[in-house]
Image 1 (cartoon, rainbow, N blue to C red):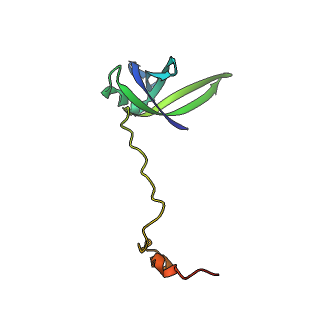
Image 2: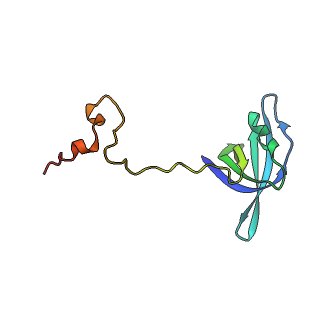
Length: 128
């Protein structure tokens, strides 16, 4: 599950070598939710550990992350695994979709000859 959240970078921790093949780095952002700020800890793993290097504490950032959960010895753990960090407000808006094409514009070429016709070619093609 992919999510994103904006907040102020509160704390950056050092990278920890958890095992011979696994390393992780944590950071905390402050999210203002109404009157009560929330301190939320995220985790970067493997080649993503350096993503936070370009930022300083107090920077406004957007964190893209996956919500992960697992069970171990009848205990349950939740991780917020960050995979992209950017300056807040830098996220590009989704491109707007056009609802219709102007009259007379060709439909994309394809294997079907009727797709190469203009809209005017079908103007009198009403069955009633």
